Image (cartoon, rainbow, N blue to C red; front, top):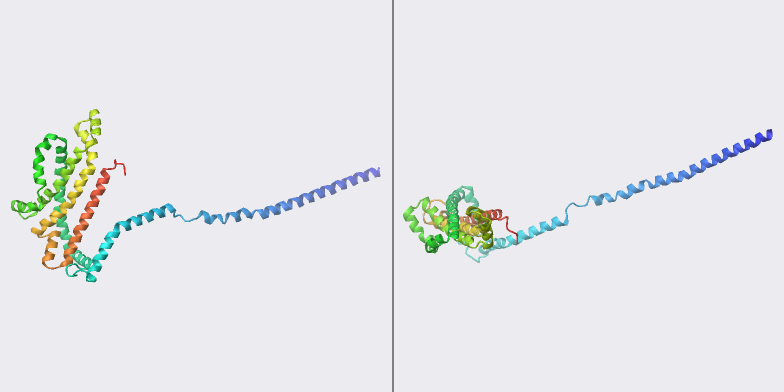
Length: 320
């Protein structure tokens, strides 16, 4: 009986010993895994840290830099001739290539322009010229565009008024200036009227040409759709005529300023033409050139405004 007990006890102790060894082996096997995990754990974070500066790379794209360079190159190309002219104007009198009395350096002209602006003379003369010029120009546009559409569309009207238009359009506006002064006096009416006369012809002739050169295929197509004459003008004639009409309008804008300056030199007490003429008589040469530069700047700005309006009204055109 005792032998049986001893055998069972021995088996029990052997079982406990194997269980203990198994637990120890499991712990020993898991320890390297945990240790390996502890070692491998920081590795992803360590590998992600160098990637963060790459994510925060410079935001400026190469395409934006190229566009900026193209814009700067275009600006430099367009302004190169102006800068060269100003540099020549500044250096030629100082080097004795021309007489500085009659062509002062551009820096002296800029100083005189600033003085005229400061004492209010430039603003006063510019306002007087702009009122006359833009007033006559606006009247010419209102009169010439409808008349040109009428003459260009209706052949009998063109045959009736054609010879009369040929006579007057070949008569220079400045040649008729004494006639305007005799009939209308030396006040504002004669000056505005001479501007209207000079501006009508470029607008009128370009409008007549634009209507006459309208695409006949489009006109026939519009007629086949039973469009009325007003709708035909609205949908076909006017859109196709806008480029040619605005060419005449831009020419008239330049003519309005040139003719007005000549008219102000003859009989006026205010205006840029009067300023230039009075500066010449008083031998204030820098002030004279300041008035000329102001006229050029006004003409350039006016032309750019007309170009912007033409683009706005010609959105239907396919860019070349």
